[in-house]
Length: 380
Image 1 (cartoon, rainbow, N blue to C red):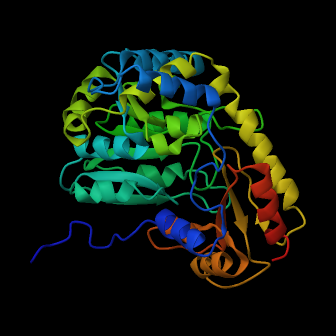
Image 2 (image 1 turned 180 degrees about the vertical axis):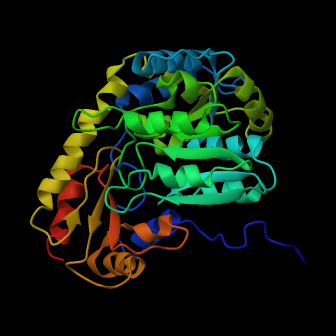
């Protein structure tokens, strides 16, 4: 059978590859970003309640109104911005689906989309499969900050969107108020949509603040915000996220959304709506993961790995230049096979596979897991 691949350069994601390798070699998995501890017993009980009470048929296409109302409350509380739950919030089957749907709804053949690298791996394939052109802007090497002069030089009449991600996966950095102002200056008066990936929005450390595009009146009107409950409630396998956007943008988003998934898991939406009534179930997340980060750094402080600053997410970058000069991909594979600890090499997040001798470690793990991992790390 003859056919032409629409993604000829795309293979299996590094996350799938490294998790499979970790399982094969019985290694501690600090590669793929998921907790190894359970979500809240209260949340599980709420899910059981709605399943047992027969909320098991299709949910409304945009999502149950109870959860959409809860999202508007959270956005208003956290960012002082109001989104209408009926017309400006849509529940999605995770953030990846939300990103793909957004790009499918707005990017046409030869449209250019500016993406910052190192970049999460689902952005570029979604752009390319819809005929768009990925335009990479590399974050500054020293601190992974945005080079706004470079972005300005890359904007032209074909630029249709800019994808930002904060807190940033894989670097763990966050955008600042000055970044928001720079973004406002660049897109003001232009037909450029800002696609803002904010799935780690409640994981910002050291007293710092998450600057959502929702907090900017100008950006709010030409942005699509994407977030994920999987990160917030420690249930990545539930694959439930959401999109917030103006009514005009949301109309187009839903045109595509209804034919990709139509509706998202009904009883779990209702469980989330009840669970998030208690604001501590998302507000306390920053303290919870800062403690995890600090404990992991304490455990590994005598190792030969050099940690970079992490201000958000649940990922820690570490430089291995004092241990080996081998390529980061080979280092990651060798650590998994020989030392029984799995990580993610940073080069896979670059279009040109830039090797900076950095590995990404996930610290969303039980203390016991972090202790076992640190014991291995300190012996490298």
